[in-house]
Length: 171
Image 1: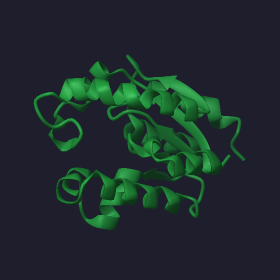
Image 2: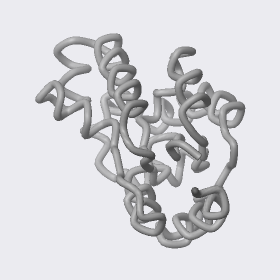
Image 3: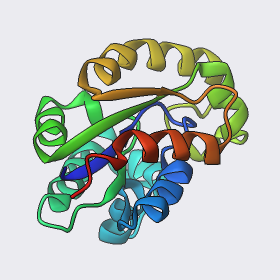
């Protein structure tokens, strides 16, 4: 099967759900944002502020490529990983892609404090969230081997849906 990549907008539950799915499937868990922090010593917000989005996206691509040489894992991807065509190719080549769907209002409610989210910080965070989600939604959907609607569902419910759906494909 390869890796199981979780994609979707911030607040969709990729990291939280990913940890539970990895446990259910007995696979390692990788969070690309945590991998970027480990490699750079900086959070996404710090990288955006000091070096810009372009540097962050390059680090994200590097972290994604490193998953290819690792054991099959559940990988929580950053919300913007789908923006680079090379990343989309890597995701399709290296495993299955699950799109965790959420609307902007629910994503913002889940996130709560948006000050750590560089693309949402500022007074127009809700408007930015809606705009960013609309711009990315077609990329998430086109890439997905499966779409899981997370709206109104608990972490455990979403994780169970994913584990059941991919369980039959495991070696």
